[in-house]
Amino acid sequence: CALVAATLLLPIAAPARQFDDEITVSAARFYRADASLTQVKAFVQVPLALLTVGANDTLAFRVTVQLKDSTGLKLAEEAWPLQHVAGAMQEPGAFTVNSVEFNIRPGKYRLDVAVEDSVTGRQLTTGTDLVGYPTRPEASDLVLSTRMRPFVPDSAVLDTEWKSGQILVTSIARVRLNPTQPSGSRIFYLLEAYTAAPDSGTMQVRIQDATGKTFVQAAPTPVHLGTGGGVLRGQLNLEGLPSGTYTFHVVVVLASGTTERAAAFSMGDLQAELQRVAAAASARLQTDEGYFAAMDEAQLRQAAEPLEYLTGSRELRPFSGLSLDGKRRFLTEFWQKRDPEPTTPRNEAREMFYGKIAYADSAYRERSAAATPGWKTDRGRIYAKYGSPDETLNRVRSGKAPSYSVWHYTRRRDTYFVFADRSGLDDFQMMMSNDRSEPGSPSWRDILGSDAIRDIGLFLSIDFFTTP
Image 1 (tube, rainbow, N blue to C red):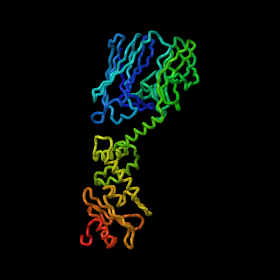
Image 2: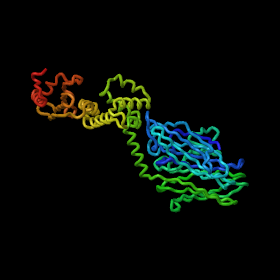
Image 3: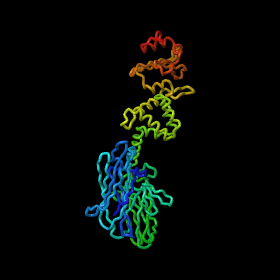
Image 4: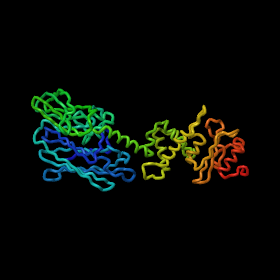
């Protein structure tokens, strides 16, 4: 009873997504007439939501399976090496699958499974009972999956697949269809029929709910089997099936008799799935990595441009020569270095900065023919750097004096900025400031006039007539 194990280290990227809160174990039995043995293909499905994120944002766990006979005697054991999965993969529905294959003789058996969370040491256990076929059955157990494809000589068999004859089957312990995914309402099925001599007939599929109500009943399809039998398979598109748990029935009617096999599956709720998808997307956008991963080339360039307000050109110089993924990594690392609370998913500094850029772009956009984006204007630049002023003075055009605005900041150090709209098109330009890094106009006194200078001086408590 040697166990032959396969390890699937990464969450399966399959149309069916799981939202279970427990480990699932399933086993499919096939008959091997040459040795009168039952071949078992078992699957252990571990939802990542059950695990704890540890150091380096990683999930770490170990899976062990034991095969026991009816007396509890351990016949075989398989323990997979410690498995690691990136913590970022721990989103609703993500899971890993470990598969194991073994042969048993007629009798009763137990397959026990233990999953140890290496971060907390917590151990989760489950299992399933098995019966070895005493004689040749009419058919194997029914296998349901989210994907099956023909095997051809050049096929690359994925870690998430196993081979049945000339068919590659995606490993899964329990199918839950997800109507929000591409082809997420499609279910695949497979079973082996066993015959002593060539036989013919039909195969029919029906879907029933827990009350026995039939929701789908497909037309019978012809079946032709050679000596020994063969693999029967197919697929159904269950788009529109209400959410809930169902039983998938396959009825094979041959000249030698009728055989029925069944297996459970579930259909996700469309609205609930959409809400989960939206929540997951929103959560990803809160992180620096997720925020920039959602951007294309043009959007990344736009996100990088205003960073000149925060740092020198030397730090930003490498950005333009990077690949798309490189630019995403650059911006992610740029903001991670400035995250005031790196232990939380959100980066408040990034959110605040781009929030100020968005506001400046809307509030301070020029209306002239050669309009400048709001964040690139003088007022937009100051707002992006310092946020809202603590005090403002706004005056409309009067006589020869243009409209002007004074921003006064007092919360960090006393700083002021004077802007004037000389064009009358809401194009306020920097006139003067006590911040030496901000260029002003040498002729600001002539532009504003003595009345405006006196007004601004009273507002700031500065005598500009005696102050250089």
